[in-house]
Structure formats: C-alpha cells, structure tokens
Image (cartoon, rainbow, N blue to C red; front, side, top):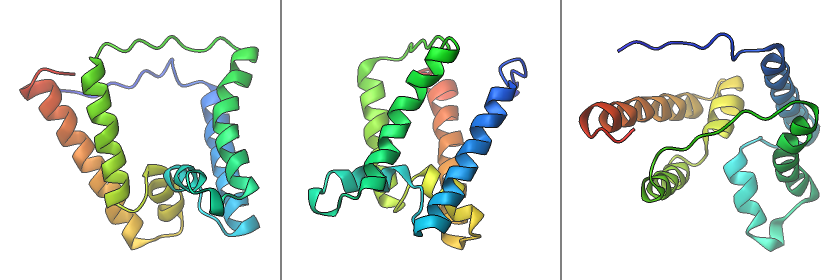
Length: 145
C-alpha cells in the first residue's frame, strides 16, 4: 500500500485557503479569546441561551464560502460511492468521538496544537491513529471503502 499525493489538485487557491484559515483562527483567538473549534461553535448554536453573534457568523461563513467560491470557479465534482447507512454510521461515530475527545480536529488539530496544548496533541494523535486503523479495516479487511 502506498499513499499518492495528487499534486495537480494542489493549487495556489489551496494555499490561500490554508492561510485564510490560519489568519481567521489567530484573529478569533487574539481578538476575542475564542477557539475556532467547529463542533463546539456549532453545538453552542443548539443552546439558544448562549448564542453569540460571532458564532452565527462563523457557521454562516462556513456555509457561504463554497457558494462564493463557486461564483468565481467551478466547484469540484463530488462522487459518494458508499451506502447511506455507512455514511450515517460514520457521522454518528465522528460525533461521538468529538464529544468523547472534548473537541474536533479543528479545535484540537489547528488551534490546540498551535497553542502547544498536550491534550490537543494527544487528541490529534488519537484522531489520526483511529482514522488510519478505520480506513485499513474498512478497505482491506471488510472491503467497504
């Protein structure tokens, strides 16, 4: 098994997107002292007492960004070949893991590791390890992926 990188898919716009994510994360942290953890921001929207405008704008930005990108360039084709039950199960497991790990890959992987948080480093290593094991089992043992 080998991992291949599609270097043709990496474009300057990919670099710009990564830079924008980094800058937005820094602005959020230094500006209002908040972490750009998407699962935490989204779950706080489900608790109406605690909703702040920045949270609504953050989620709105996640939804509107692909629309704006699509106005400038064609969006890539997305083909989902897995079954709906498998996708639902995967989504529920990711949600469970997010709650179990007290955060998601954006909160721990981007923000926590940037702050040199040992907890976030452990969480990110755990995310990656279980992702690798899941893909291996799904693809090579069960033939699902």
